[in-house]
Amino acid sequence: MTLPVFLVTFLLSTASHAQNVSCTCRYQGEDYGIGESICLKGSNGMRMATCSMVLNNTSWKFSNAPCPLTELDQSNPTASQSQTSDAEGKTNWQETAMFNPEKL
Image 1 (tube, rainbow, N blue to C red):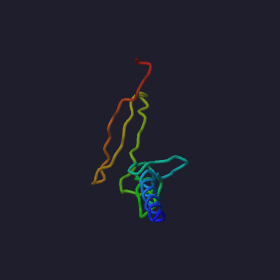
Image 2 (cartoon, rainbow, N blue to C red; image 1 turned 180 degrees about the vertical axis):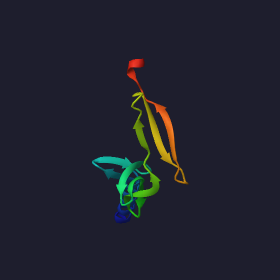
Image 3 (cartoon, rainbow, N blue to C red; image 1 turned 120 degrees about the horizontal axis):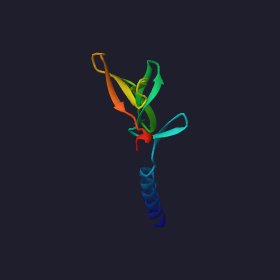
Image 4 (cartoon, one colour; image 1 turned 90 degrees about the horizontal axis):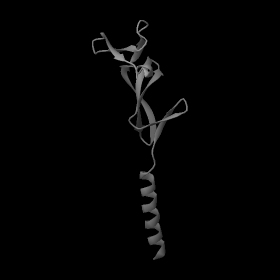
């Protein structure tokens, strides 16, 4: 009678422990959680990749989206421009202000 009780207790504790395990993907010594996206170099160049689960393992899933680029505006060092490409391959630029502690 004690063996079935022990076995059930063991299985329940193992199942609850398995649910508490946080899986991560690794890149250059850093951990990234499931669902996090970063820019990785793949066979098609730099692409966005998302950490995901494949069977019982974590894996990077590459998208067709290129990595967002940022260029520093040389005439205004506190502003930068972000470049993205739309579905038709057109380049879109968006200027954003950077934090400047001297203006505080």
